[in-house]
Image (cartoon, rainbow, N blue to C red; front, side, top):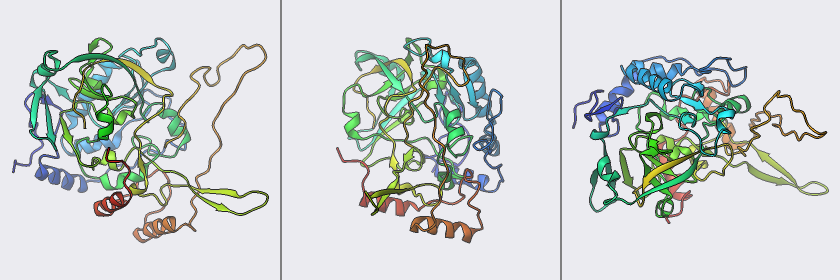
Length: 417
């Protein structure tokens, strides 16, 4: 068993820590984090956002890194933002969330690399290209490691240019914070999902179904973006591009691809990027049945009654041209369309008619007559945890891994093929 340490294991890989392959180190990090007190999430969802740039400061995430003596990751990440994305709306400084300004978005059919939005779940590593290797493992006949030079060799892997659209729930996050309760510096719309991840460390792991992978040119590996070397903040030296799926599946800085028999159990796949349908009941009433819907949220949700967001319709997006090898291995939902222009409070000179579209007024309904809601409220009362503020993450897991696995086996979310 490797010695538990937070040093960098891979030569030439700076700002990257492998957790999953070193359980002793993972346990040590968890003990350190559990011995500390960290600040609560900011309450910017229900009050005006600061008129600053960066708008939000990732204080908790910086505290996590400081506790593990990983401050250099924070510093290098922000330095990379300043070099590669100086003109974006810096919504969150760390982990970095940068939004494209409207004039930048409309400047060209292909979004310039400088203006393409960024959504990160952690720091930006500095990986030397010559030291890079991609591991292929899992349910394969033979595990292999492939250098970046080999991937770029057209005699070994066919090359292709492909124009794709990327979209993430991190885009237009300013509007999300203003419209939907959530943890302002990270887990918008689902803060209650953080409990099981609290004070633990993970490497980013997601999956897509085999039926998606096997379609030619739909899951690819990229080292260029718009005819230029892939920027560090976009995943250099190599990233995955999963066309037509949410950006969270297009993993940056990819270093390992495993063939799996079932969806990844990584927290980002299992506990984030889920959507919950409004469950319906029908009550008789003249002259027609009345549809009564109740809300899924902090008061009753579990990971296993959510659906993993995969496909995503095109709306407010950014386009880019990637260079990739073909046949590479890879193993809230609301209408996100929006009027880009005219903008709010813009003066519009028109010929007599302007079409206005806006948001509906909302309340957050918690119906304690529902069994799951009542159970969650009893659990909170037992633990002495107030339900409000709505935006504060729960400090306990929504269900155990065994409970989750049993529900997934009983009600599979993904077909086998």
